[in-house]
Structure formats: C-alpha cells, structure tokens
Image (tube, rainbow, N blue to C red; front, side, top):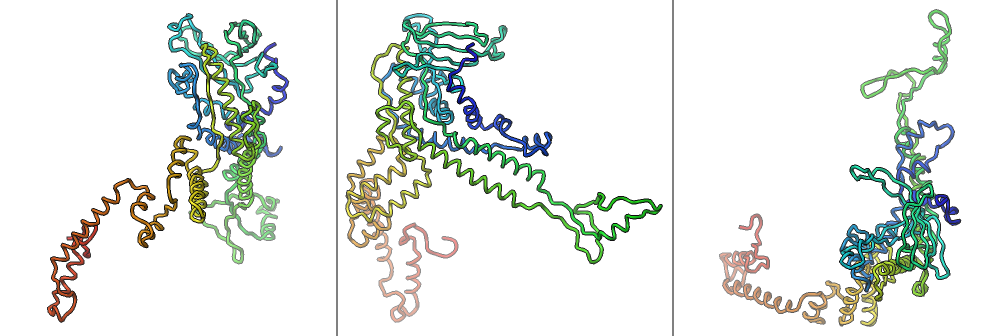
Length: 562
C-alpha cells in the first residue's frame, strides 16, 4: 500500500524528525511529549498541575531565527537576471507573487524554506501550475506557476537517476473536503501523490488512503517539479535534547516557586511537659499521642503566648539554594545551546555542492552561512528552471548570492570598529589607512547596504588625501595653522561653499562688535584717574552685557533677560 511505503532513510530518521519538528514548534505538543514525571511518588494529579505551569525555553528556535536573519540581511545583494516575464514579476511580488499571496521570492525563502532547511536538514519546494482552459496566451491570462513546500516528513519515498535528478517520488498531503451546500471546508483527507518521469512527460497520480486512484494527469515538462534542498545535518541535532532537559529544570523550578516556596510557622515547646500533660485526661483515660496535630491561627491580627525561657515563635522558609542552582544551570545550558548551534553551523556542508561552493572557505561561522547561501542559490536556480519549463522560456537565467555573511550584533560591530579607529592614526601611509577605513565601513554597515552602495563608499575613500577625521584633532590642527579651513570642512563632510558663508558670517559679527565698541567712551575703562566718578566702570559693565557682542543675541544679565 502507498500509505505504508516509505524510503529506508525515512524509516530511519522519522523519530529524529519528530524531535526536531517539536523543537522547532516549541508548543504544547513539545511539552506533552517530553515532560516526564519526577518519580513514582508524583501522582498524576500533581503531574498535570506541573504540566500546566510548565513553559518551553525555546532558545534553540531563537538561535535559529538569528541565523536565518543573518542570511537574509544580505538579501539586497542577491542578483536575479533573466527568466520569463511572469517569473520576473512574481519574484518581485507582482501578479500574485511566487505563492499567489503577493509574496516575493526572497520573503518566501525566508519565511517558509530556510527554517525548515536549518531545523529539518531537508525541505521540498513544489512548483505547481494552475490548469489552463485553453492553449493560447489569451487563455493563460495572468496565470503563472506558483510555489509551496513539502516538509521532509511529507516526502515519503524517492529515487534519483544517474543524472542526480528525481526519477520517481511519493508525496503525502492533506486536502480539504467541502460542504456541498455552502462550499466551505469540512474536513481533511489524506492524499498520496505518486510522480514518475516518462517519455510523454511527468505522470502524476493521486491516491486516497485506501490506494484508490482519485485523479491522474501528465505534465508536459521533462522534470518532476519538486526541488529538494538539503544540508548535511540539522542544527537541532545536538541541542534538541538540551531544550528537553531545560524544560524539565524549568518545570521543577516553577512548581517549587508556586507551590513549595512558602514560609511555615514554628513554635518551641517542652516535650517532657507536653508528655506529662497528655498521659492522663480528666476521666483517667489515655490522651492523644505526643505530637498530634494542633490547629494554630496565625496572621497579622493573631498573637501567640509563649512560655518564659523559650524562643519566640516565628516563620522559616525553604532554602533558595536549590532554586538558585537550577537557574544557574539553565543559564549555562542556554549558552551551551548557542555554542553547539554555532558549531553545527560552521560544520554545515551542502548536499548539492557545486564548483562555486567548493571554492568557499568553510572555516568558521561565516563559512557555514556562505554554504547555506550556496544551497539556497542552487535551489533557486532549479526553481527558476522548472518555472520556465512550464512557460516554454529558454532564455538565460542568472542567480547569484552573496559570498560573505556575519552573525555579529550591532554592539559587537561598534566595539570592533572603535578598536580599528584607534589604529587608523598609527598606520604610516595613507594607502594603508584607506584600506583600514574600508574595513571599518564594511564592519559597521556592510551588512545593511547593497554591494553597489558599498563600492561607491570605497571609491570616495580612495579619493581622500587624509583619513584622520577626529573633530578634536582637526580643530587643533586648524588653530595651530597646519590645516586650512577648506580641507577641514571637506574632511568633516560639509557641503561646498560652507567656508565662504562662514567667513561672511564671521565678518558680519566682527563688524557688529566693532560698531558697538566704537560707540562707547574711548577713555580707559576702570581707571579712577580718568573717570573719577566711576562712569567708566559702569560703561564697561554695560558693554559686557550688551546683546550686540553676544553671539546668541542675548543679554548677559542675571535673572530675567529684560
């Protein structure tokens, strides 16, 4: 039966795929599958209470998103040229986009493909085509191929030919059943799609779960329209168990904090006196056992008498050390998850290696990201080829992905750039300074702008005669007379003509000061022999307070500027 037919690798990996899938989802299914009882002493009721309080520490998925974002920060540098008109429009999100939901190809790869590829190590992209009602371009209208994915669990079995292309494949999918009256979806049915290359084209047969043939057709294209992207291993291989263990610790901490971490009342008593008191009752019968439970009212409005010579009753609480140790362990595991994922990333290898990918330096994280870029590039080329087969387009298609990537945060980039800036003034030649300045620019903004913009900045750096642009140093050099104003303004990035305007403004200010000073008494200020009545001192004070000599136009007086 087709429903039980699976590839040997599928049977071998199915359990591992389930763990990776649940780790990627990190939801209720993950909790219910992997949360375990502490011991046989934990009742089912207690376990269900703990299950409700438990959360999933999804740090593995968070790191996966970081890697995905690092790849598609460089999406602006992806070069796509050629292809049929509908392909070019759909890639840009026009005419319904690549998935008939107005999605660009870059967004489709980012949202649907890359996470599946990183988490599951394999994903299938199906290039489908709506059924045409005629054979002319007018009948075709705006209809064009579109994309959707098959998770690795839905690719049941496959066979490659000697040319490393799919010859046969068995796919699983769920389809809606619809209400006859309203046309609304009612339920799902299981569909098994068997595809095979033949001389007439690609044979497509859909069966239900009882192996009954539902539909069959022949696609008039030479290749099975399924592109399977693969990498050497999932990034969850080593960290899925870490997330499971972290969830157990987090669950223990939550139940402890919510139900066990309460102070309890203690009171000292004399055991001998208590025993004598309870040995005989009023009627001479045996009393309750020593240590029997006694109900005590406690609270902010309740008091307690305690015998002389005994310690005051009080409250004690459980030690926080076990909780603190568990939280510290989780912090260590969080860092280890990131380290293991970065190590797995640096060891990624493509299963679709090309001559281009073999030339890439695969050492370190950037090499792993570059390898992922090559996998996506090869995948996109196959998608474009099948798309154009549907439309009979035979023109050349060019798809090129960036060769360099980085996982550094903005803060890490700033720190690195600041260190390099300190080295800039120590280099002996302008040529060396230019190259270091280019490296600084690439570190800070190289991942945010296109390669064209980056080259434009590099060209501007090559024209600079000096690269020391520290404002403090420039001002000191101008004041010392070893740097002219024009070059200083150019180094600071001011527009041309700024110097002339500044000189005119400075001259106007000096003229205002000169006019203000010429209107004052020319006698020496503050000398009693010349102005025994003290008018010179008053005139000097008035001159210092006038708005004419003040650059901002205000009066230098205390209190309100009247």
